[in-house]
Length: 238
Image (cartoon, rainbow, N blue to C red):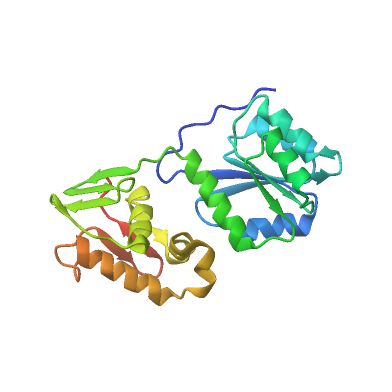
């Protein structure tokens, strides 16, 4: 079966997630848990409908229930692997070791058992989509040189020490430079599974510390700018 070729996932690209889950309430709940301006969704309740979506859309990731009305999700993974490397995360009530091994051997990339934490789901989806994005570990922007692989960060050639939290925030801003990232999205992505226990003040403090280290005048930043009422942006787009 032909599948549309995946375009290169550039910085700021919106990822299209296919959810194949026959429980309508859970299907809708996954969308609500993952919804942000970086994701769009196709929702299916059968394998037959999922096949049509895969033929017609450029899908970035598949969330696939194992037990579906018209077939077995593990068999569908094998079918998908005949023509596509798209990441597939299986969702199932089965948690026996044999089921997990069978799913992974069929070609699934990850395995989430019901009931699952929506925070964990968000974190795993984000990890797999980052792996697909082709995003660089190295950014040269204006007079900055940020190497996230080596964890070396330079401003005008001078090394700058950044905490792990500051590094995560900086990377998100660099990957989305020229675009505004919402405060809520930054909190989710910087603190990941701990975001429920982090308030907005923690983000404000982290932004201030990053500005103090990178900006010539942190009170009047040239790069890490506030978009009032929305979030933050790295203002240099080149």
